Figure 1 (cartoon, one colour):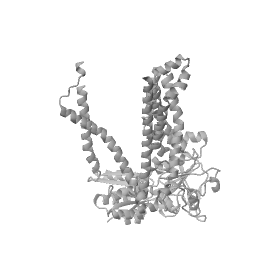
Figure 2 (cartoon, rainbow over the protein chains, first blue to last red):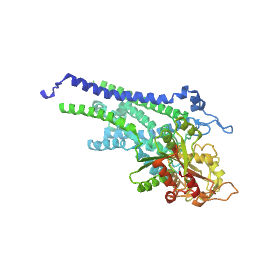
Figure 3 (cartoon, rainbow over the protein chains, first blue to last red):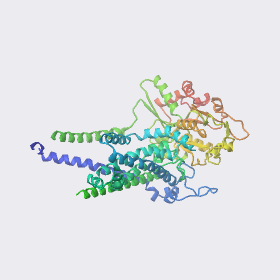
Figure 4 (cartoon, each protein chain N blue to C red):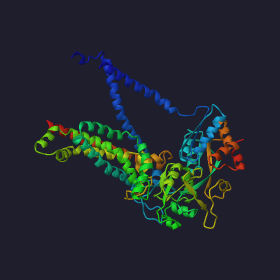
Length: 319
Length: 295
């Protein structure tokens, strides 16, 4: 047993080592706070600066506006215009549409794959399926975007006779591919964590594997699945490259899933490079960045809280 | 175990040291002697690269770095003094001139080539001619169906460029006469993407420099109903009869000297303009080229 005992040679060395490691952990935290402060700071002129407010106010970003006398009030995103128009609604609708399609596509696939892997697959199959699905998460999003732009878009247009080649459906499906591993991994972990004793009890009462999976494991792991969905949704909102390439980037406010869309993240990526430093347009882009930051932060936080609760509950049952 | 702990500590220290040395190194940026940086318009980037290649062959030891990103990006770089040459497919806006003055930058403009904005259609689209007015109506969504122009009963899919593009700015000013693009216009990141998209879309329409053709057809354009239909070619753009033509510019901070001046004069020389023609840009008429050189 002697070799498992640690005897620090010097207290000073241990002290320095510990502090250094604490510093690295703290660096990530400080980094996040600083990033948020910086992003938010750049959007402050919208709230306080008079000159900026002449061009853009919260009101004008949210409500329909009339810009030309011969037209009705509309939501329009046209920041580079004689009359700049900064309505965030078309972008918001676009972002939500892409994320919803991605979730509708990825949730059933991810959850079903998780049920199969944790309940039905043999150990050997499981060892193949799990890493392969998790490998999906490693595909660079620009590659997926490229695939959606060239292959998927043409296929969808020919298959469904769509008017727009690049549209919300196309972007949403490609986005879904990046979400599947998120939902799959977390759901699968939650299902595997359901104690074997519960399964044994159900089988002892005469349930078949199908009933065990759907009436026992699935409800018990539901919070984990919910956490996976929430985290996946956060990812779908923030993902940039795929929507930039595959969505058509037209800021249309419509409910149709086959219209082109322009999302928050793609708008920042496309416009921040050319924007005049300190202009109202610049502030609005940073406000969008703040919104995205807050939103993904909240989804990640709630996902984490659900997971912690689940872990406590399952452990509580076991004892 | 002890070895692992030491290794880990070493790793942490190494990572910290690396960060500390890399950060100042990355902050330095360009500005080395013997290097000319060229940045800006995506329309001009191919020409810039060809010029750079030819010129570097003539002047061994000199490095010319060319990158795109859009006219807006190039102008921003010029104002931040991070490029020697800004390639632009439109003039600078009043707002940008004001920004330059604020930052102590004196933009100087030289024309380096001509370009016509071609209207792209799918090869199988029956439409051959449109007027400027019809183009404006299409791009502002007053006309939304090919039927209204004598084509098939199909919705017109309009392709446009991101708003940092000089081509976008020029088209908006000269064809849309300042009005906004329809929100339905799909924005793509470069002329190459527009050509690619229209080539795949039977009912699409796009616009961009005439140097790109590949798998789309160039439409003939009429100034108004009464004028003749003009096809965008070398001759019609040089003599000014094609209605959507423009000059392409290089901007400098102050009148260029030394290496940069020599590069400009060479690009405007007969040899440089031949290079432009070889990659499908329109060379400047001789007197115009001479006027833009620096003695």
